[in-house]
Image (tube, rainbow, N blue to C red; front, top):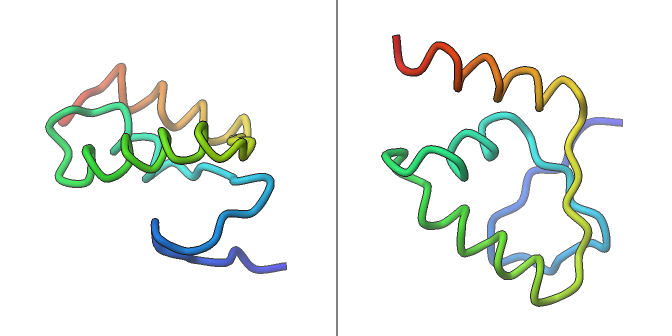
Length: 70
């Protein structure tokens, strides 16, 4: 099943899967979409949606954190 791409204003599903790009933007305060991702994460919490990520996403985020922008 292909991933379904939505925007931050769409109706929320009970479970939201974070991908690597979202995770990096959420974590990196200098990323252009950081504020939007943080606001979306607050919305998820307020509306009771469960946010999850795969091990691959965590691995990619760790790799990004270790190497930075180099």
